[in-house]
Image 1 (cartoon, rainbow, N blue to C red):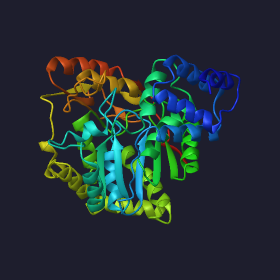
Image 2: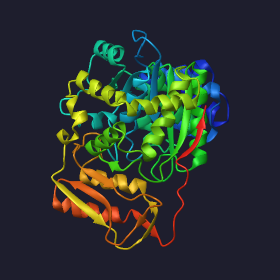
Image 3: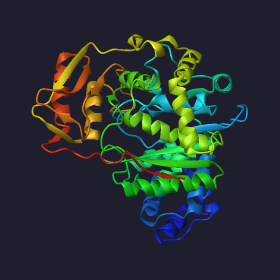
Image 4: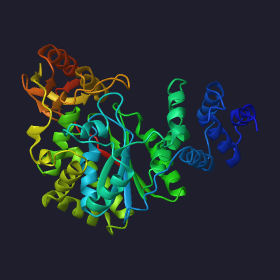
Amino acid sequence: MLMTDLIVKKRDGGELSHEEINFMIDGYTQGQIPDYQMSAMCMAILLRGMTDRETLDMTMAMVHSGETLDLSPIQGVKGDKHSTGGVGDKTSLVLCPMVAACGLKVAKMSGRGLGHTGGTIDKLESFPGFTTGISEETFFKNVNKIGIAIAGQTADLVPADKKLYALRDVTGTVPSIPLIVSSIMSKKLASGADVIVLDVKCGSGAFMKTEQDARTLAQGLTRIGRLAGRKCAAVITDMDQPLGWAVGNALEVKEAISVLKGEKGGDLLELCLTLGSCMLTEAGLAGSIEEARAKLEKTISDGTALEKLSQMVTAQQGDGRDVYDTSRLPLAPVQMEVPALEGGYVRRIEAEQVGLVSMHLGGGRATKDSEIDLSVGLVLHKKVGDSVEAGESLATIHASSQEKAAEAAELLRACYSLSPDPVQRSPFIKDIIR
């Protein structure tokens, strides 16, 4: 079998066989197929697409390119959640304790962030001493005992995806739906969960800029998940403005805790209730969306979700008391308000630019080796549709110095567009794909 023949076949619109796809993924992972041939194949796939059968075969070939996580030592139904990314996305910190408190086992593998803010792992490290570098034995023991553990991804999980994504990133082939689907689902399938729920974001702060592109991706993800034998659903959500109010690692942890305490609601809580309802119904732990939602809301009102987060922090070498007293978490030395220069109604917030303001402050990574300052970021006070008076604060900047705070304040003010007339908010939950 020759890679040249496979490139020509796909270039001309042909369908690759199961054996051809396995040959291609295995050969590339092992270094037997060079980057230049694989990049040609990626471009052919981008232009010609793949059938569901091809996408499934490619996904499974990537799953088996390295180790897989066998979750059979964990009793009960195992659930996982994936987000396509956005600004202010601290969903896992709220959602995972909620569903764990309802009896779904959450054995989650997460990564660090590259870009606007840290990933879930970075955010959790805002708890002093907290570690995600736990052994498999401890990982399983914690999930069985308290219902939840979040660990760092191992280097041996889906090595084909790590190599292929790096290539796609520099060859203009990232936007291919089959390649995105196989990348996301290979990691989720290799992680072993029975139920997978996907948060597919669309808008200015998301990878998928339009609702239609997000829908196409969500449909592809759920089809491949079900073809692979997993229970799967996707929620399409708005990312035309940051999720919640906080952007920045420790600030997002504090916001997540305030939601679990029942002190804050809004789009973050609504997202977690929607995703959680999908998880519980797909897992058979609730007979309807309404029953699932009621169970999830109860975990906030009775404090069991907050207690799950505290137990997880303690089990992973942090101090669970920090969950109940967030003053113990990192705090930037400088806080600066960003007053509005004029009055009106918030028409638009450039979500991606808000993320870049946080990164400018040190809350994100420009490269994989960048050091993150867990304490910095910003907290919005006004979002789309809100009225604003001249001089009223749009947000609070949390920075390491007055100079950085002043720079960030000017950048953040430019992210806001105001209208003299009232502004209608668009629906936050766009659709649910089951």
